[in-house]
Figure (spheres, rainbow, N blue to C red):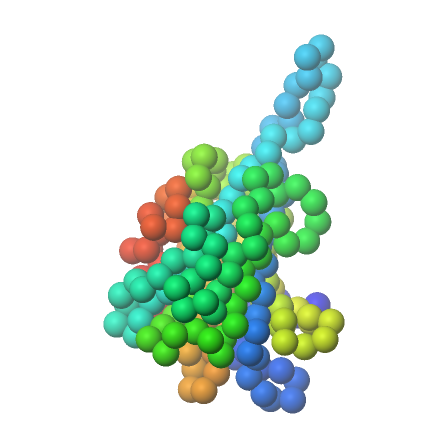
Length: 197
């Protein structure tokens, strides 16, 4: 398991030998804390599904948004970043949504990639539990986890600015953010994400 980060903490994205990571996977997971649905005859059914969406917003050094990867645009314009698809329920263990980033292929104009979570159906975060985001080294055999940020902030907000990766010299740095926001899609969170740069 990777390093457990707290809100505001940062970590250089390096391998054990000091080399910079080249390919990372940002995984987002969550479980439903929504009320249990009642069956036809009053029996209990499973908890209501919670549909969250992971997205990535790309910024230049001046804070201008350059690109967005989300459920309606699964790949960045520079080809470096790919969303593996939308999970509508959060059901199952592990990562519910995944964004793959080839850090060596990110456009030189990009200084920051901010990762956000939104609820398209406007479900609030008091219906979510066990939410996390994690960075996995996808360039190493076995894909070891590098860092994990466990979200403990529930409430009536519909989105979160979760984390960012920023250029750091010749490499990249991961920062846990965890700021509340409101919005249905990544485009609704561009201004919120820009405040974290």
